[in-house]
Image 1 (cartoon, helix red, strand yellow):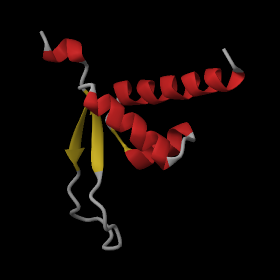
Image 2 (spheres, helix red, strand yellow; image 1 turned 135 degrees about the vertical axis):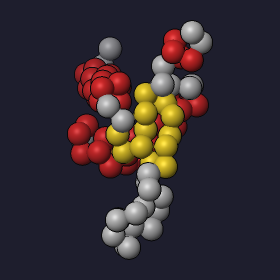
Image 3 (tube, rainbow, N blue to C red; image 1 turned 90 degrees about the vertical axis):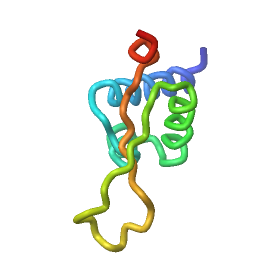
Image 4 (cartoon, one colour; image 1 turned 180 degrees about the vertical axis):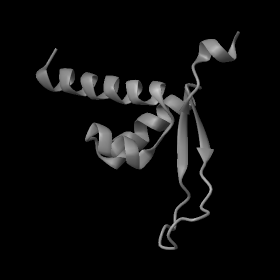
Amino acid sequence: MRPGDMNLQRKVSDLLGLLVRAPRTQNELVELTGMDKDTIRRWLRAFEDEGLLVKQKISRKGMPRDVSRPMFLYVWHPLSETQA
C-alpha cells in the first residue's frame, strides 16, 4: 500500500467516525477533516447511495440572506438498524 493510500484511509475513517458520533453538515465535515468540499460531497453521495446516510434539509430560518444554497444535515443511518 502506498503512503497516500494510508492517508486517504485515515481521512475516510475520520469522516465516518464524525458521522457516526453526530449529525453534521458538509461545511462542518470540511473543517473537521481538512478534506476539500468536492471530496466530502463525493463521499457523502456514496454513503447516501448505499443507504448509510440520511440527508435532512436544515431550516433557513435565522440564517443570513447571503446563504443561497439549501443546507443539509447528514445523519448516520446504518443498514443494520433499517433491516431489524
